[in-house]
Length: 337
Image (tube, rainbow, N blue to C red; front, side, top):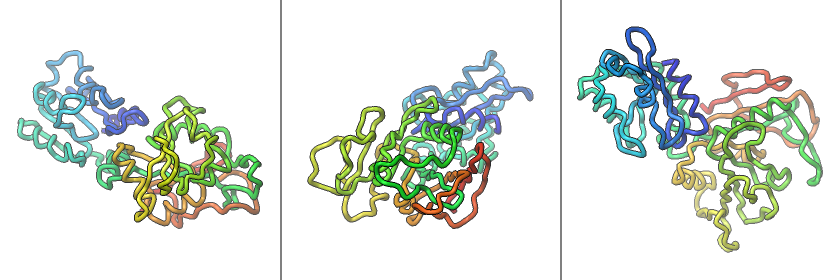
């Protein structure tokens, strides 16, 4: 199952809106087949693993290990349970059940009814964490939210500077590369109004090989200047607003006035199958996520410098689950309790 998890991670950034899945086939104590799901429309991990087995007659005496319950419905590809049962694989070991409406135990039931010995819950916690985006999306009907910011040693995210001054560099080149890698792994990326106006970020993947996420912003009164990078064609963008009288623009989505704007944005992202959202600031946007509890993970860099004055960093209020050094900057990871 550990090997299944390793394989499944290869689909991070490309498999969504499908889950990350890895599969391993074992015959007489030896691995004879492996596979993972790369992207929607491609063969699933179980199919890749079964197809990789050279001598298919061995499948009748093998165990299939898979990190997520095999699908039982016809989607872009045929159901995996059908192939598993047709090849008479006698035993299937599953990391965790698939709680999405289309599966939700149906795959396990089909395998059991076909006489297959099914074992479930192997490394279940680890398998669910790997697919935390997928499970959050289907169980909470919203994207998995990752907050990211960089702060100085004295806990400021920006200095006191004029609007025409560029932002100060808090971390280092390696941390920047890591952030661009993270961008490539998520479906959407969001920055606050003030950050967009003051810093004009591109919100694209440049220091890493990967796809650009969908760029998102909340422009309540439609006041974002048209020349900002978020309006260029380097990556798709959606701008949410409460203003009803603006000029027609396909990038703008009007939100209802009677709902908290983040919840209304989540409803639209759910419709569009955006499984994850990477939030890069600024302070007000981060605080809106933190105060509402509508976040799941935070990645906080602390650089090796002090501002002594400026814009205070957001405060989470409890200890990180892990920390590591990225060159001369500290990276702390928080999970919402």
